Structures are given as C-alpha cells and as structure tokens.
Length: 382
Image 1 (spheres, rainbow, N blue to C red):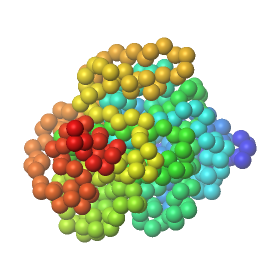
Image 2: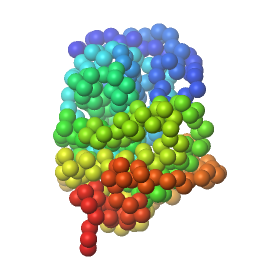
Image 3: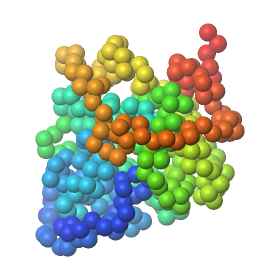
C-alpha cells in the first residue's frame, strides 16, 4: 500500500440512535454521512485527529475529530461526540494499513485495570509526562471481543484483528510521541494474555481497588444510565473480562437469559478482573507492577514508582503537580462524582457463590493480600 491509495472521507451530517456511550457499541449506523472527498493513507496514519474507533464483522472505521479524542475521560465517548467525519474500509484494507504501520516504534505500556478503580485519574496524572501520548479507553478491542464471542470471527481472524487494532492505535502521529500509554477498558482483561503473546514488547501494569468499593461504584454507574435490561445483558453476556482459559459458559448463559440481576452482573465483572489478572501472571509472569487506587492517593513512593516507569533514559526524575488528584477525572461525563452521589441503590447482593466459582480469596482480603493472590495464587501466611 502506498500513500496514493484513496479512501472515502464521509462527512457526518447527523448523529442518530440512542447511543449513550456506555454499555453499547457505536458505529456507522449511529451516523448519517455523505461523501465529501478522497484521502490517502497518510491522512489516516499521520494525523492525531484521525483515530481508529471500531469494527463490525465486515468493516472498520476511523473517526476524524477537530480535537484529540484521547483525553479527557474516555476516548470512545469523545470519538462519538467530537467526530465530524468517518473513513470506512473493509478488514483487508485495515490489515494492510496496520502492516504499513508495523510494530510500535516507541515504548507502549498497557494500563490494565479492575474498573472503577482510579485508572482515569492515573491518565490525568500521566498526561503531564512530556512526550507521553495517553489514550483513555479506546474501544476497538471491545468490538473485536464482541465479534469473537458471538461467533462472527474465527480464532485466526480474531488474533489477526487484535494485532492490527494495537498497531493502528500506536501509529506514529504528528506531533510524534516518545512513548504511549493505553488504558484499556476493564473488559479487555480477557485479552491481556493474548495481547502479550501476540505483541510481547508491550509492557503491562495492573490497577485495582478495594473490591467491594469497586463493585459498589459500578452498580451506581449502571443505575445512572437506566440501561435497558436486554441491552445490558447482551453487552456483558458477550464481553466478560475472563480469558478463554477460564470456563465462562455458565456465566454467559445466565446473563443472556436474564437470570442475573444487574447488580450481580456488575459484581461478577469486577471480580472477574482479579481472576483474569491472576491468569495473566500464571501464563506470562508478573506485571511490570501492580498499583492500587488507595496507595496512589497518597503522595509517596508508589506515585514515584508509577512515574518512574515512564522515565526514559537520560530524563530527570518525573515531577507532576497534584491537579490530577484534586479534579474529578470523569467530571465531564454522565458518571461524575456528583451524579453517582445521587444514586440511591442497594449495593448488597450475595456473591459468595461467584467468589467460589472464580476461585478468589475473600472479598474482604487486604489490598496487599490481593496482590499476593494475583502474583502467587494464594494469600501470604506472613
């Protein structure tokens, strides 16, 4: 593929449908478009305002935005909100573009996370690091996960698409970044080990929080959206954050059949991330590091350690101001602290059977104890 290859640039004239940005996937069906121009590969690959959004069983598409959609808050929601144009192509063309990009040319760190654990706050902190491009929840891998779990992709196609998605996320843009950090959605923990196998140069960290607090927060998020029950079940039933090495058919069957309450599904999703993190360590060795929301709220060695991971050779010690800790990292979204504080929901449900099915330690286990579980599969006796 050379830069003269032409792609159709379609102008968005209207945004349609009920897309809210959470618990559903947007796509070309959410936009009314018309032909505007033809563009070349360089227009897509060298422009930080042209970003890969998602794919269907036959197509892939990039959004063109007047401002970078990577931050603040959520890339996937910003892409829908800011997009003025789409560039749509088939899978073969997407793969050819990814081949032209090649493997990432700069260090890439994947921020895997439990969800509702301060990972967006971490993105705000890292945004202050010079030369670091931070992406907060691009969703292209969730599209791939959905297609695979619904039988629309073979295993071979799925693996190839994961590689192309990551390559296109890490395309060198202008201005060029000296390194990249991608905070993946929590559901992508089902893919973390696979990503490591397919693209071993990528670095992985894991971020989590007191499990009960994270579960309570996700229940409030669900309540804030008043999600249609069938849409909710379809979304999570086909996208649990568990790797293929963990049997999950029973969970999926119950969710898709509507046999689990929303609160119970939320709890399962949060707990599944811990088991997925454990499976990653079993297969690939320890994460580059494991951080907790609680320890990062304190100014101290753990914040220094996180920043040091992004300190390139020859650079001085990283120092960032404290604005990342003081500002609501999701204040501009429908799940701001103010909005969630208004949710009056019952956050208690019996999940001991889920704990047992996932072979997790008690949910009251300390944060350090959970780190032991992730790294060793058992709690320390010390």
